[in-house]
Image 1: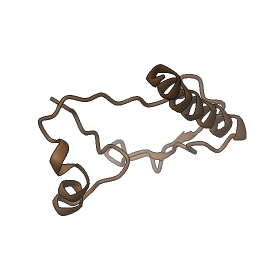
Image 2: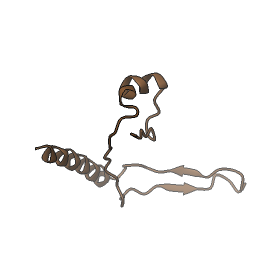
Image 3: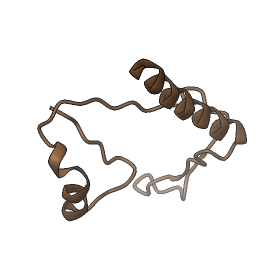
Image 4: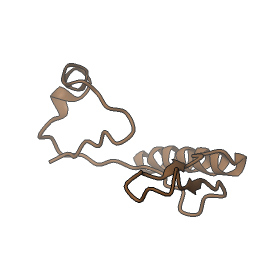
Length: 87
């Protein structure tokens, strides 16, 4: 069974069914480049001295240009690898 992840973009049921409805219960796979060692650094700060107050979290995703470059290279290499394996 194919697994669909909606961890970045949440789709309404209608949009999901329009895009992927015919693929549900079909065999498949997915490939995703992952940045294991990002150069970007985020920040975690206390909002107050109240322990029940959630912390302030700013992840700064992809703020460092090298992170974007590496992810783009990973996507290109993944796409090229699929093309090479088809021939």
